Amino acid sequence: MMDHPRIVLDPAVLAGKPLVRGTRLAVEFVIDLLAAGWSEAQILDNYPGLCRDDILACLAYARDVLSSEKVFPSAA
Image (tube, helix red, strand yellow):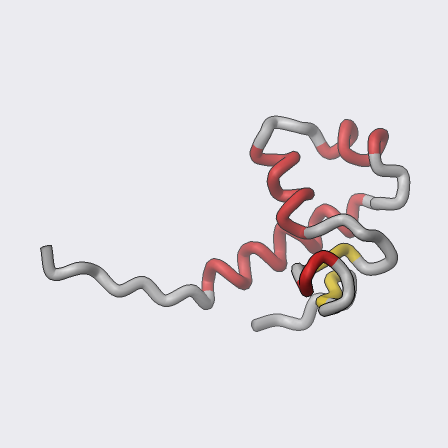
């Protein structure tokens, strides 16, 4: 997996879920906002601790996690 300097994993925060560095916002939460239709501008307005590069880092992290996922077709 690629290095993501804006994303951290801290077992003491949110049970070790990946977070945006310097925040308590999980990558999953940011991705969820985007999936729910929030625009980049809406996210940045509502979460001033984030910047555009943080949102892009969340997307890159999700991409890398998904690209390393192994799928095994069933024999059904």
